[in-house]
Image (cartoon, rainbow, N blue to C red; front, side, top):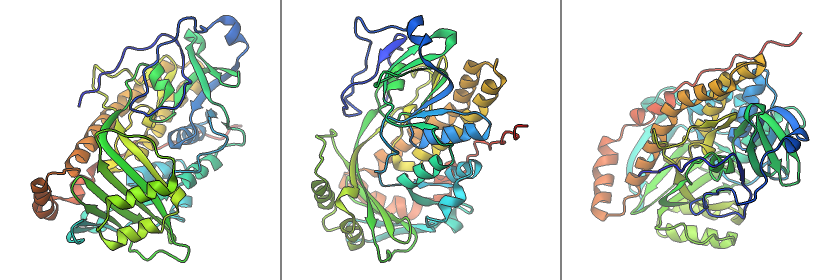
Length: 445
């Protein structure tokens, strides 16, 4: 599963183009005659110390982490508001440790249920394969599913007014040597920043500018949905996994009125994008026809517009092949650097970890005025690479194993591997990781 990185692009690259599928987006080299960086363009640009591109989980957590260490950052978001769509994501204790560090965990805990355990079943008749208690198998574990939109709004609420610049879509990136990096926006505005943090997601134009390969489609698609029970949902606070042949599904209570569900299925190609919400839901239900009634009931309780379908992608950061995470004063965080499949539930958790680690390395260099930003960014990469590369690879391998379609292999999985061999504690060992805490900057005199 080798992903070979492409050579870095020259210093100026236009990054805007029509939206395409993440696995088919071509690598851009600058067109002949593209505007190059010049002293006249940079002299008219607004000067900033730190600009973060993308107001997703990684971008907002990075801005908040830096702020707690005394560094202000401007966050550029291409949309007119924070992303309100999406469903839910699961955070394990390493993610909650970061949210504690940046001061938002308790506000979120008050809204979302703590998941107590896990139940694993077969799609054939709903036969029970195994059941776990987190407290018994992994003492101290904290698992909660949270609504993505609420997490973003909570992070954003801790930033000062005006910290997020909406409707600020990136058009081009141009290195300016020791002066920083020039960002040109679609509306003509220009920003010259000493540090640019790329938190612009799986389809990151900044990662492309830095020479990274496109994320690799892993051969699996996912449906996700958020069921709404206005009168209260009836389920125990457990993760429910159901395994079939080349298809797996699950659901988990999020709050007293919301239940998150997912389906992963094998697919040779991502296929055409479907925009008809009702059709998406019908397609998802068709994949689990005859499966346990509780799963189907959750799916039927989901508003059509709360169902999404996405390809699963990743990027393995092979040593010596992947470009470095930083280039000059530009650095990548979260999915922009290391997109991973959701099989370990670590995508958001790792983005949160990235934010704290980057802030710890970067803040002293920015605050000192004469600090070596490049050294700080290299320190961040050095600390994080050994964490994110193995997790990305492990998530990909776990996904390949649990998506088996061969009936004999599935019988062994359901009859031997899950009932007798799976141990929850060792499987969740990666959630014991501690990325370090933030020491808030002392108040100014």
